[in-house]
Image 1 (cartoon, rainbow, N blue to C red):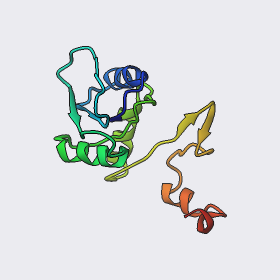
Image 2 (spheres, helix red, strand yellow):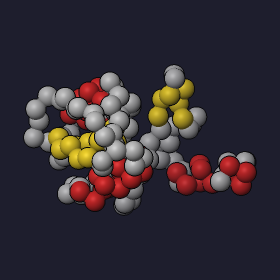
Image 3 (cartoon, one colour):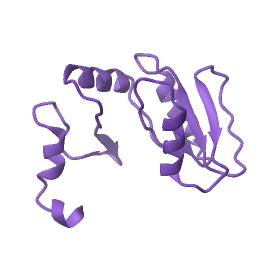
Image 4 (cartoon, rainbow, N blue to C red):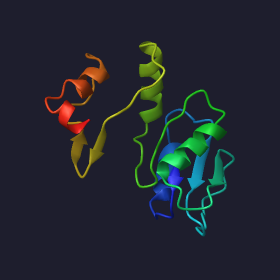
Length: 137
């Protein structure tokens, strides 16, 4: 989880800790140069530092390089997961022999992408069959 000092970090971490199945680790990558991160003491949480201003992609790559988990999930410090998020994603991947998956999000009360993926079609077709795909690629 890349962070730069947003107050929502605690809610994000709590949503991970409150999953219906326990995650094996939570890597928080501090991309600020002077942020003080104060979280409840938990052995699952590890804080890494980039030295500041490297960007969220760099921070995610640091986290992937440091992870020891079989599965890696990304969460921004201003977002949170519903209780069964990880359980459902892993079950979906295992049931469909997938190495990766993505999920919909609710942003400002609207679901993105608009149609929730229900497993009836390939998620790639949802992305690639958009009428304006070539314009937005």
